[in-house]
Length: 549
Image 1 (cartoon, rainbow, N blue to C red):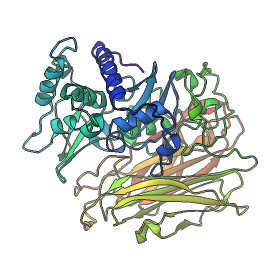
Image 2: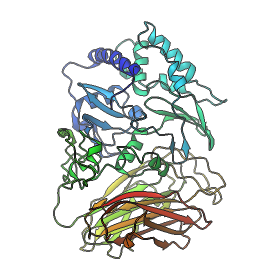
Image 3: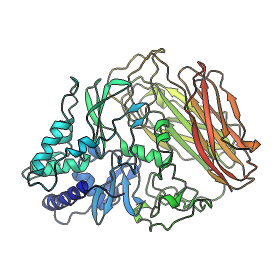
Image 4: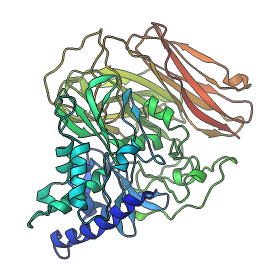
């Protein structure tokens, strides 16, 4: 988890001394941070650690770091908090930033059909030495040369974006700005560039540049340059929610992949791979107590000692007893243009069986969103899923909410997610130019006349069961041209209960189905889902591991 290069260790020490001096100069005597003043209704999370709150304040807040998207919790021995663009980490009483794009964390190079440049060792070799007495000047010139403001005739503004990251008026409030220190503060946010600028192979209007801690993204349509929400993607890797298929495929072997399991102790699916970690309630909005997990990992994944949970991480829904119903809402894109179509998926589970699921906008002012969208076809199943496609037109940040009702007539609390719609004219959608599906924080790819391949996701009601237990397997397929079928099967399994299961979709663009099965043999296998559209194109298969004890 710690920065493993000598260069970055030296930078961290140098920045640490300078930042201590800066904070001493600008912080009023006796100032304390009130946790309650740092809650954000946009995501439902609060910044409860005073050190994180102060860092957030003096580093530009939401504009630079994004909104908080987790609570404070313990990850591999360190207290951390996820924001949309960064992961803050407390080391020795000092706030550091996790190098999210390091090979040992999330070395992503493709997300939702977007292709980012990988790290270039030749670029790293050109970086100036931190021991040089002229380092502050040298590093500015290095970044100016490697991160130009113009590339391929486009105004990418990479250097200006880097140099203007930390607001001068906040960093040097009431004092004379120090250009050398400001450079180091900007380095603290981005790190050094690790690639040259590179156009997306599938869309020349997108140009990316990779840094140690983020990826700058230029969009010619704006034109605008902004940071990819890389920490949001790491959260998706850990939770398995809103996880793009290509990123999921690249992260299959990662120790973080699909670790979030509320049923298990410390909410860890494989605790042996993340010692010193407690994910209890880490990604549950709010600050209330959460129900601790009680399950244990399978025998092939022995539990390891974990760190004592940080008090700020004790958090959300009130513990319940008896039958429970849960509901989640997902978007295939959380940032869209006015009039662009977005798919809204609602998935609910109940031990009593479900009557219906529904979603709506929370007084967004957009008639399409605020309409009540209900699916009455749950037919008392214990798991129910449905997908809606809508095209809202009102710009702004909107909260969508979903809930479900079980067969006893009990409604769940609302579960929410944010949809952001850019300002701009409402485009006229064309049926011959379907839009590829981006993930959280990834701008929409320019439409092309070639239909996208279908996509498929798979959900298991439990990833570890006892022999004879019933499990629910949900498959959700999506296609711009309509789906022929969706299916699933246990790969390389000789259990007849896990043989191929197929559902005909009747050319619907969104198709979901839940099956109940009782595996008859102990095993650890991959459950594989597939889909085929009406043109005969197949989806990239989705997989979830199932352990049968």
